[in-house]
Structures are given as C-alpha cells and as structure tokens.
Image 1 (cartoon, helix red, strand yellow):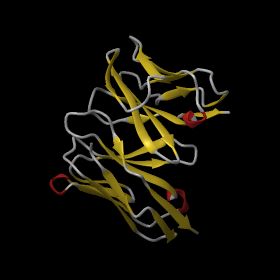
Image 2 (cartoon, chains in turn red, blue; image 1 turned 30 degrees about the horizontal axis):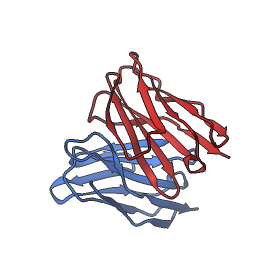
Image 3 (tube, chains in turn brown, yellow; image 1 turned 30 degrees about the vertical axis):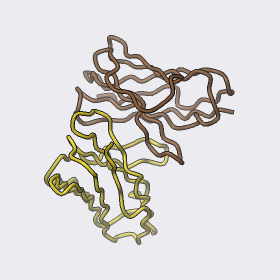
Image 4 (cartoon, chains in turn green, yellow; image 1 turned 45 degrees about the horizontal axis):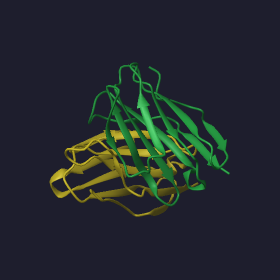
Length: 112
Length: 109
C-alpha cells in the first residue's frame, strides 16, 4: 500500500511569488491535514480537509490556502511568499477524522 | 489551547543503553501519537496510543490519560535510533495534532 506522497520534494522560490504543494493521501483515506515545521516554531497545524471541506484552520495568514479534491488529494497554496515561509511542509492523511495520522516525506520550501 | 511538553529536550546515550522519553499534555486528549523524525524530515509512526501500553520490538509506549502523560521506552539503543522524537495529540473536540517540541536523541557507538 503506497504511503502519503508529497510533491515536489524541494522548491526554491523568490519573495513575492506563489507556490502550490500537492499531497496524495493513502488510498482510502479521506482526511488530509497540513503542517509547517520551522526551527523556531516547531510543528504547527495549518489546516484540515475532510470530504472536500476545510474543517479546521490554524493560526496562519490568509496567504495560506488549500483545497481537497473528490479523490481526497489535497493542495496547499501560499501566495506572496515571504522569507519566513521557508519551512518543511508536511501533509498527513487519516482514514477518517480523529484517527491515526500518517505523514508524507514533506516539501522543503526555500524562499530567497 | 492544549500544551504538549516533552522531556528531556536532548539525550545522548551510548549504544546499548535504555532510555525513557516523556510527554505531558495539559488537557484531555482524543488520542496520542509518537513519531520519529528521520534525517530527511519524514515523521515515522511509532505508536498510536490513546491509553494503555503497547510494544513494538525494542520500543514500547505507555499513556496514562487520566494523569495526562505518555512515556516512550527505547531499549538496547542502536545508532539508527538517533533523531528527534515527537509526541502529538489532538484535544477533545478538535482534530488538529498539537506537537511537543521534541526530544533529540543521539546514540553514540
């Protein structure tokens, strides 16, 4: 059974640009959550999607957005990139809400 | 919101030693997970343990939900056990995982 797949693995972007990250959950999993990891703030929750609806959102500015498709794949978008957005972005999938979460390998974003 | 604290922040041990990592949480939680973050950043699932004790090889975990803590035991440490260990829990009525700040374990040959 394939795990959680995140693409791309690495990205370098310039300040002001926007970026889209993709996450394919484990087959059959319907819940997808996104997390940001930085050395200073640790692992922080961004948002959770279930059945194509955002169910929960963390304390991040509106530049961070996401969506989930009917096949449960999810994308997150960051617009008007800032240097502080440089981080490891991790996606987690769960069978349904409030069940064990499994993480992908992450996308490492560098903003220059 | 819920606070999750891990101790110790750093642990350096000789290969073959045993270790205990602790995770305290400030409020009731739906469940609790332990992860090992590998050098490439991926979080590897170790245990999903809302309560009780589970064992997997050299690793075991115990969660005492009523006292709001969980322990991760690593026996006969190997160099491949090195890395950062995180516990994470969602509070009741919420789905997001709140992570602790991690314990960085270094196993010296």
